[in-house]
Image 1: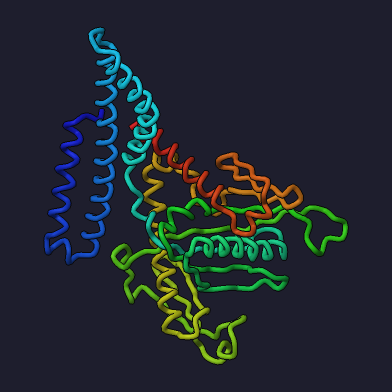
Image 2: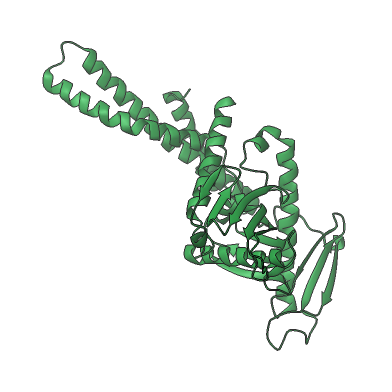
Amino acid sequence: MIDHSYLEHLKEQVTALESRMSLPEVSSDPKKMQECMREYAHKKKLADCAGKVLFLTDAKEESEAILSDITSDEELREMAEMELADISEQLPEAERELMIALIPPDPTDSRNVIMEIRAGTGGDEAGIFSGDLHRMYTRYFDAKGWKHSVLDVSPSEAGGYKEISFSVEGENVYKTLKHEGGTHRVQRVPSTETQGRVHTSAATVAVLAEAEEVDIEVRAEDLRIDTYRASGAGGQHVNTTDSAIRITHIPTGVVVQCQDERSQHKNKAAAMKMLRAKLFDEEQRKKAEAEASERKSMVGTGDRSEKIRTYNFPQNRMTDHRINLTLYKLDRVMEGDLEEILTALYEHDVELRIKQQLKS
């Protein structure tokens, strides 16, 4: 139960964290400082929300006391009635904001991401659909003002991609995109189909939060680094030098590669970024599986094998199977109009976490 003693306790914690962040042993340690700032932001938000709820609750009780007092004059009663009506509108939203603030923050929400799209079942059409998904996402990124760049690409002969990896940088990127991981299914008539039959094919999407060096320790002796000649589009320089990089993490068998940059040094840096993201993702996955209740409160698992969405072109329909949301504007979605579906997924995730919070 939120009361004034709880609010005072929160304020004391906020003050203590402010003092802690000024200590040399914290300010000089990036990991400690990062953790401290995250906890400070959470406690400060919680204190602000709790303060608002308590202020409104106290005001409500005062107004109700005036109205229940038969000696109150008419003017005072009118003012109390107006204030009570105003509070009745504000209090539910303030209480909801408090419940959201009570949810422990996901430390990865503010991070940039690395996304991977791979053609699945469906042959050439799956490769074309992978290209369509990449275009859809990049249109959305451009509208948001986010920076994005291709890290590795394997073109499909019929167009699109067998596989493409790209980085995305901006504000709260992982928070916005983290529910995009899984299998995306498309239903449409391929351009090569003479009978007009609808074909079904699929592509898988992975969304990996970028990891800092402080998150994942990667030892040089655990790596095998190979260079090779880049293939595909890229101008005259491509295919003339062994600038592409493939890194194998020997303990886990994770393999990453990057061939998009012209510089071998830049490709190596990008490949290391991809490797850390994959190792960090696996670490987070194991933690989530260990915390079964937390896993159940998520919108989907992020597993590539989970069918999350269907894009039906003949009906101009997109359906997200996790939240049973259907939008009849697939043409606009494919042009990057993703705000409605991404907002709905985020809000559904928040509701699940609020329920989890109430249970605990």
